[in-house]
Image 1 (tube, rainbow, N blue to C red):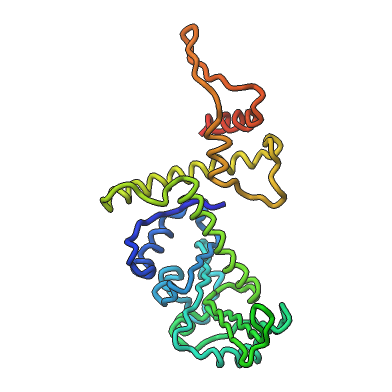
Image 2: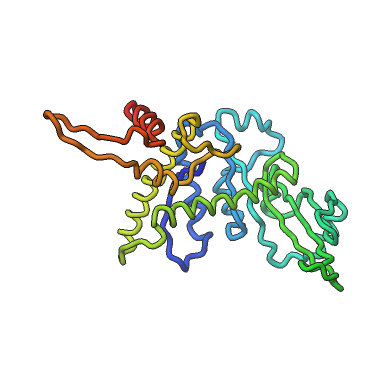
Amino acid sequence: EGYMALCELRPGNQHCQKGTPEFIRRAIEALPPSAKGKNILFRFDSGNDSIDTVKSVLKEPLVPGLDKTRHEMGKTKPYIIIKRNLRKEDPDWWFTTAKTDGAHTIPHKGINRYVGKIELDNAVCNQYPDVHVVFEVIEHCVDSDGTKLLFPKIEVNTFWTNLDEDAETVIELYHDHATMEQFHSELKTDMGVERLPSGKYGVNQVLFSIAMCAFNALRFIGQTAIGKKELLPIKPRAGTIRKRIGTVIRDIIHFAGKYVSHAGKTIFKMYEHNPWLPSFQYLYSCFQTI
């Protein structure tokens, strides 16, 4: 649904991994009580490919031979998907491994795709036996315009994960991180937080925290409204699970009305034929009980 759990303002020249393990620990501590004891997935891109990131999420490694169910009983089970940074790894080695251990598909003519999972002999897999590597290796035999390539182009994507799902599911779960870009757009564009107003870093941090509270309040209003689809004047498309922040501001926050003082009373008058009136009244009744 896209709620903000924790926000942190950082200098633009700071590497994304700096301070991230500490930030992850604070984020875990800030989880609401409703999240305790549930499975939570942490998803990172290649900038956070570090064993420190794995340690901050999974904490202590599992003791080999210890029953996982007993080890995790009554605790929140964390899962990770971390896009690996290949660094100096040889793409040709991955291509050979993928052809041997991966499932082969042909998504388009001239393109061979291999997916699968393997164990690697390195610090992460050695310390965390339940963590393995999911790979996606794509051999491009033709260019984007259909021109045949003299030497095929090899594209390699690999991920750290402790999920038990198949490789395709893990890859799709990682690709869904693009949804985060929509949330960023709502915060920056719909709420006008793309540029913070102060020249002082501390002031902007406070303003950013206030913006997070406003963002979550607007998200809550939108999710409450979409929960009563029969009251909405415009029926959402099938599969819609959230209402964009800009739409919430336009349809509900900018609700037309006026205050009138009469006979010692203050009345908020609304146009009775406003198509959003049923939803507005429903939201008002819901928030009176909070």
